[in-house]
Image (spheres, rainbow, N blue to C red):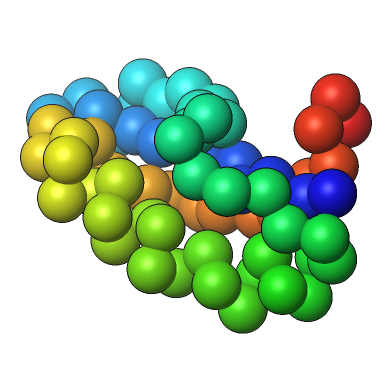
Length: 64
């Protein structure tokens, strides 16, 4: 299983960043499927968190 991992930074303080593993998003059986479908989840996350920017995203196995 693979999950989406976001590197997020405050919009007003781009030097303050964190890693977010949104638990509300589904997990995917393969890295390819995760990568293919993650863009929609990134946009959804951004709409719910207007004070943040997503600097990077990737797919990882949980606990990696």
